Length: 482
Ligand SMILES: Cc1cc2nc3c(=O)[nH]c(=O)nc-3n(C[C@H](O)[C@H](O)[C@H](O)COP(=O)(O)OP(=O)(O)OC[C@H]3O[C@@H](n4cnc5c(N)ncnc54)[C@H](O)[C@@H]3O)c2cc1C
Image (cartoon, rainbow, N blue to C red):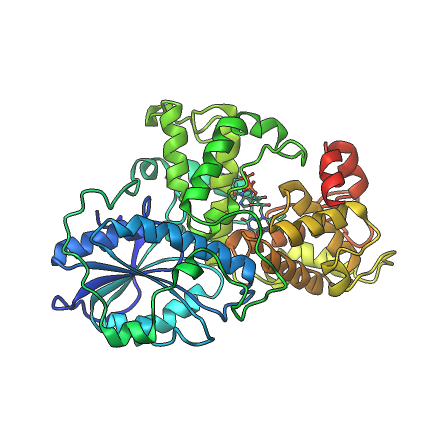
């Protein structure tokens, strides 16, 4: 199936070449072999042209925050993809740089023989720049397909400042998109010519990742080895296992208990969603199918968190995070100028923080002390340790973690950069639209002024570790990470 028109965007004016050897799918964001509009689109183009499909999934050494942790997670995803494509006529080239710059020229070499190139549309990190450069340089048509959210993110033409307004927009626009889903298993029964072996010279210069790499061996790669691998495994298989466990054991408690660090009632799916190992469409289809959902169940547009989807309270609470908040972040990454800088936070927040910039700060810390979790605050240190050691942090604590850095660092713009750096360096789900939205939230983005006016914060929402400990069940959490 070709991609829906509101998810498809040509990135250049170069021609489509019918005589090419293959259709090339340059997989950069939806790193999976099913539930993917981009893969469906590439397959449909290959069928139209009667040509094989070749999939390139590459991993560079020089991307910002490249580390043993991130590499291992992506490689495990590639191993899953290699298994999925192995039994099909689709060619799959998992390429991992062994030395910096080794991958240079690979896309061009494959595109030189291609009818056209299909890729994923993704609004954040270095991907838009990389794809714009590729679009200008490639000799063939480059088409980008958006499969990130339930609502095509390019169908929205303004940046929303509040979740309630975006939720209202979703409730007005989402209905037709809820029934247009990518194929769960596009490789089964596929009628395509088999992909020919790649030319020897090409394979010699850009060999496919070895089995050793695909098993997640990364200790000898020149990436940040100070950020080591974690137990959590990358790939569609691990993602699905995690989803099923959460669906069967956590989802019914999500609405009530997700804020308690001891409750284990949130999904933990953000790393797989970030790397595209898991699709929001698959989650939506599973939830809707299990609850016997049909479009007639959609409620009136109220912009309220509950009551629109026509699902159980827990599923609606989960979808409000997975769809409203995640896609609001996507909207910000696509359309909010400076979404990844302090300059992109709301004017009212910058103004009140500037007024309180010179307030006395009883505790002040630099990046290194924060990085090492060596502050006076045991709750903050526990959260930072969890981030460093496990590659994740509990959602509620992530908010507190951010607010404290705003309090302890003299200049809000520096505090913003420190938070984004720590988040993106250590978190498996970092470098995402949610990363800049989450850090921005600490500084008032998607929020409103709160009284009373407080030192340092002015009217930006304040949070305290003492209140957090009083309000939440977190004894076991602190015993583990404290
Ligand atoms: C300072 C700060 C930094 C953050 N950095 C990131 C980040 O780098 N990557 C990231 O994915 N999220 C980030 N978040 C948002 C949120 O904390 C995480 O998405 C959530 O904790 C992930 O855990 P989960 O998968 O168990 O979420 P669940 O509660 O199970 O939610 C399901 C999914 O919904 C989405 N979601 C949930 N909460 C939010 C939210 N507040 N905003 C946007 N989407 C949300 C995520 O994709 C998540 O996986 C940040 C929040 C803050 C305050």
